[in-house]
Length: 339
Ligand code: ADP
Ligand code: MG
Image (cartoon, rainbow, N blue to C red):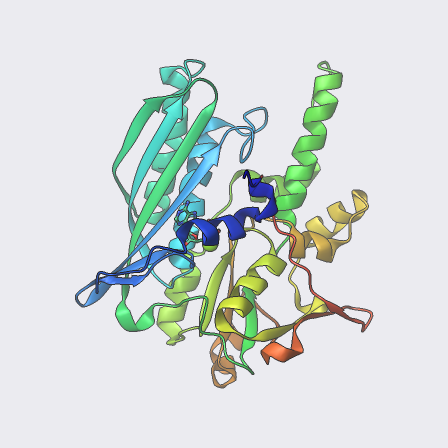
C-alpha cells in the first residue's frame, strides 16, 4: 500500500511519524508538539527548536537577497524560542548547496546570519555543510534558556482567559503577494523595473521579519506569565487551533480585535482580498499569540503593541470568529500547505 503524504497534511504527518516515540529520559520535559522542545537542566531548562528552509518552497532568490535570507532564517527560529517565554542563546546552521553558489554569495548569506546573531545576542556555535544536486537548503537549530517556572506552552489556556496578539498581522503575506506579482511582471517584461517604493511596510515584513524579543523582556518586567503562547508563523487561525487543540478549549475571536497595519489593509483591498482573511490565513508575521488570566489584564492593558482579540471558551463552544458585521462563523484553519 502507498499513502500519499497529502492525505495527512503537515501536522497529521508529524503526528503519524512521531506517535511511537515516548519520552523516556526524565530530563525530556517536552517533546514534539510545541514551538520548541524543553530539556531539564537543573535550575534552568534548555529550549530547542529547528526549522528548515528549502529554496523554491520557503524562499525565492529572485526577490530575496541572500543577506535577508540569512537574517530571516535565524529570526524564524528565534521566534519559536521566544514563543516558549525563553531567551535564545546559541544557534547551529546547516546548509546544503549546489555549485551554483559562490563563496561571495555564501558570504552574503552569512552576513545576514551574523547581523541576526548580533541583533538578538545569540552565538553561532556549529552546523554542517554539504553539497546538494541543486538549489539551497538551510536548517537552523536555536537553543535557548528559561527558568523552569516561566516556561509557557501551547496547552495552558483556560476558559475565560483573554486572547492577546502582539504587533499586526497579514502584512508579510501581502508583501509576498506583491513580490510574486512583481516577479511575474518582470519575467514577462524584463525591461520594466519593479516599483515597490510605496509598499515599504509589507515588503519589509516579508523580507526582514523580526522576532519578539522585547515582548518577552516586557513580560519579565511587568511580572506577567501568559497561560499559553505560540508564535504566529502560519496565520492566526492555524495558531488559535493549535492552542485550542492542545489546551482542550474553544475560542471566540473578534475580527475587530485583530491588529492590522493600515498599509496592509489598503494593500489587501488592492489585491481584492479581505484584510481579515490575510491576517487569519496569511503567514510569516512572527508575532506572538498568547492567553492571559483575566486577573492579569491590568498588566497588558497599557502596553504598546499588545491587542486583546478574544476570549477562551469551553471546548464544546467551538472556535468562532465574530465578524465586524456581527456574524458568528466557525473559524477555519487553512494555514500553509507545503506538500
Ligand atoms: P513551528 O511551526 O513552531 O516551527 P512545526 O509545526 O514545525 O512548529 O512543528 C510542530 C512540532 O513537531 C514541533 O515540536 C517540532 O519539533 C515537531 N516536528 C516537526 N517535524 C518533525 C519530524 N520530522 N520529526 C520529529 N518531530 C517533528
Ligand atoms: Mg512556532
